[in-house]
Amino acid sequence: MMETNVTAKSQPGTKVVLTQKIRDSEQQTIVTQRKNSPLSLARGEFISHTCEGIFSLHGGASYELQDSQVVCTSEASTIITLLIEGNLQFGYDDLEFTLDASSEPQALIVNLAQPCNFHRRLVKGSYIVKLNLVISPQWISNRIKEACPASQFVSTHKAAAMVNFTGEMLEATKKVLSLSAPKTLNDYIQLEASSFALIQMCIEQLADKPTSESPACCSTYNDSIGKAIHYIEQHLSEDIRLEKLAQQMAMSVSSLQSKFKQQLGMTVASYTRDRRLHIARKHLEKGYCSITEAAYEAGYHHPSNFSAAFKKAFGESPQAFMQNKTE
Image (tube, rainbow, N blue to C red; front, side, top):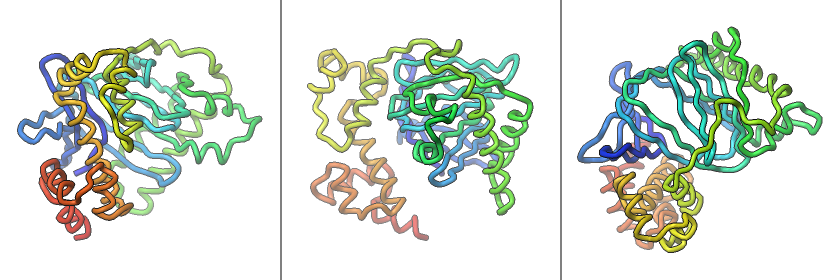
């Protein structure tokens, strides 16, 4: 089972919360993490890979099963989106992009100099074939000089540019997608070599892209709950007070709670608690901290309370989770 740290926000009548991927033979399904009534959002063959400290990639071929809106926080990075089939509507903060590959493949590169809110619309019945490459800003900054043609782009927050999707890029994208389950050293080398080739071909085109102009696929996006989620994500280690959050969103506390409940199916406090628990589980999985430290980071003063909340959220205690991880 592979977890994705995203939240889905539904159209009226459909409440969607955290999602995860579940493998079923050669297919995978993205479903909500609601215990009592999990809802499948997309089904298909997915790929996910990380080249530590350099880039990560995810994508695949899938059918979208529900009308919904996905919301999460994107870290500072340079993101390449390669769309072979289908239509994508997504964005970062106030920017929204629409890519349509009905006539030809589409490619977009976006630079995030700081974390921001990511949002993407899912449309029931849509078939999507895409690949995302997320490049580490540290890796880029260590290799870029002031005279580099790409220096202005990678130093500008929310810089965006369409990329000419060449035949060579299409072949490299298909190669990466075909290696969703690498088994040998050669498979991993081919996967990462093709990914680097795509990064190189996209970066090469930045010299001709003015950062002051928005691409034609870009429009303005405004969503108060998405902004609230972004604020919460950036302050999870702090004491988040409803009054201050409502003030940041320019609305009353009651209005904020009502919109949050309507769109996410949970209160602000429930969302905050859930996200802290997910982060704690991720830190435990990576070996970053002990159970006691994870409890403190998640805002619990007593490990027993943390264990109870952890078991309620994930179906097993932190102790059992750690034991199963090592087996």
